[in-house]
Amino acid sequence: MSHTIDHLGIAVKSLEHARKFYEQLGLTIASEEVVPHEKVKVAMITLGESRIELLEATSADSVVAKFLEKRGEGLHHVAIQVPDLAHAVETLKANGTRLISEEIKVGAGGHRYVFVHPSSTGGVLLELVEEQKHL
Ligand code: ZN
Image (cartoon, rainbow, N blue to C red; front, side):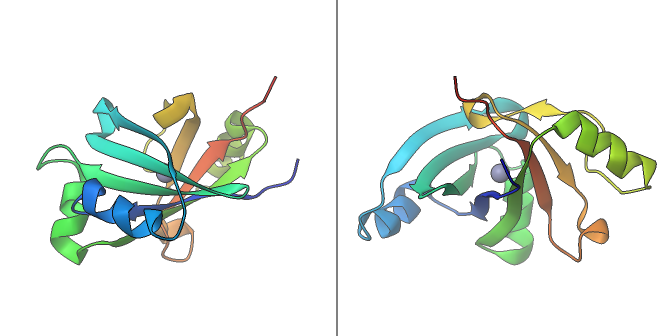
């Protein structure tokens, strides 16, 4: 499998409000769940091979709450799939790339991910997601 865009993360004030916009285009929310360690509620909208991830803060000290405060609603991050996340992280670290956290985390839907700091990616918060092996 090749690298693809896994999803686009969009910070919104209200999932309830945002999902209505996408639903009127005939898109459906594939899943909705709270990710406690990120203090966000996440709604995933399937778009072909890719997805849109709507993010609502569940707490005022959530990263998404701070983003909304500073910049308002909008594109928060871009997520790309890599075949081997541990290998990608090792390579980036060896090359001095700034990661948001050193550890690989587990997020919505059980996917493994890390965030790369915008200072290393041309100004975009980049999420690397390990390609899920479908059995
Ligand atoms: Zn994401």
